[in-house]
Image: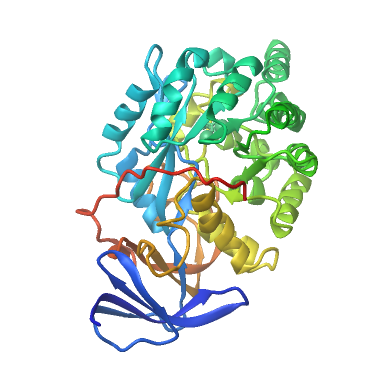
Length: 459
Ligand code: URP
Ligand code: ZN
Ligand code: ZN
């Protein structure tokens, strides 16, 4: 058999440790996965000494979304190039539902925006405008392959918040056929704390964290889980940031509630001390960065397989955009870049430090998001028949994160100066090379919009 591509001597994460194998790629799919294969291919890559992973899935990105009179600065084109340089070959982004827009229209508009996306992408459907009026649209979208939806229990002043009654109705409508994702913060608490801080002149970045405490997250997760429990419905909580939020989720799970938990690298490797820096407002993201103890609790939960997915919430702004809120936290566009540093950070600060295993990393960055969001027939694993989405990582090179060497549009990185144990050598999407060394060679390669199929079982 002659393959289009052969990756020889690959070190892959197997059930028990790392094993060597050869990967044959044909027509965009993994066609063979053996301990060795004859050297017969149009392109042979010798991956001796390198780790080969299934292309990672960032299940939470926001390319070019409107926030506070501006837009997150990566569009699908620039953000997907950054993704590729981070070994991410699938992103799951979100629709943006304009006022008065149907969900269907919001999906169509978002697909148009993603025309130049260089990696495969799926969409979660945001239900933000008059959710209860949109209920009847949901089954049609699910039938068309848009099976994940998202609501917010906060951002009332931006017109995005759902009431708990609305949440119950949307969850009931989706359950069994799709999955509802929730940004969980108790808005009453957030609004009253924010108002108190602003009234008393407490406007520096640390008051962003004080206005959106862990308690607000825990309260909303507990409330949502209670409703999910009553309905017997599954729920996916995005960007869990705190020990309290995590405990609320795990308590619900212990009671039998079907609840998936996602966290992000910023809640693992950064803490609220960032807000005390001279330019602390740049780190404003929602939920806020927490304490070191919160970071440790999240690491422990990853080690204990209690967190299902690590995704980024990639939502970058330039220094200039961030500086609008230099004097007042509530004026700062919230969000951080992250898609390019997702895997390097988790590998360096998770696997290399011994906090998690390489298998756990593959589970939370590839296998679980693929399964949970109905992509596992094609994505998330090195398996014959799966899309040939791959990355090759050289673990023997030491790097330092620097904004100047990253590929997104933001001109700063929240992780500036942090060490990375390794370097990406190739990113391959459907058997085509997107990234080779420091070069993006995939200018003419575009990703596909992915339809999803909700798994029947809660995993
Ligand atoms: O601050 C953040 N994370 N911005 C993006 C929107 C969201 O809440 O996820
Ligand atoms: Zn959010
Ligand atoms: Zn988000």
